[in-house]
Amino acid sequence: MGAKRWPKRGVAIAGGLALAAGVMVVTAGPASADPVSCQNVFPDRPGGYCAQVTGIDAGSSLVLHNGPDYTSGVVDGSGHYTDGTWLKLYCWTTGAADADGHGDTYWFNADDNNGNIGFVNDWYVTSGGFSTWSKVINHC
Image 1 (spheres, one colour):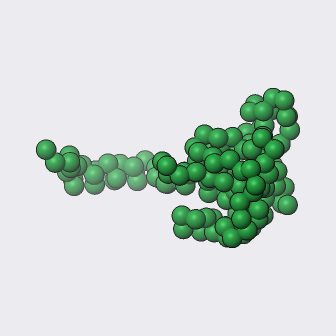
Image 2 (cartoon, rainbow, N blue to C red; image 1 turned 135 degrees about the vertical axis):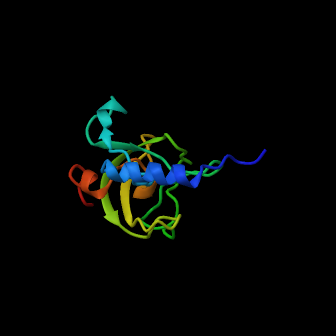
């Protein structure tokens, strides 16, 4: 049995209704949620903002880098973080674009709550957009 196909007319009608209703469909990147107060995540380490690792393919992981790029090396002792891992975000800077080619050049100096501090690209954490996190997270 093949894949179910939507009739073209049904798609056109649904699209027309969405436009008529003033609905705009936007596909967000992995970093679409907002950072949260770390008090909710790490009660023993209140203050600051935290975000979860996201957008990591199965079998892959995110690591902390020594600088805001992929050539500075990996922080000694850095874990291999998968989707859902919480990181504390200290500050932001710019650097190399994300590894998946989306053009995101923002990086956070982050802490994994296990004594490891390094840089992660914004694309891979639930930080929301620049207009959201730049109000609460300072530039490094």
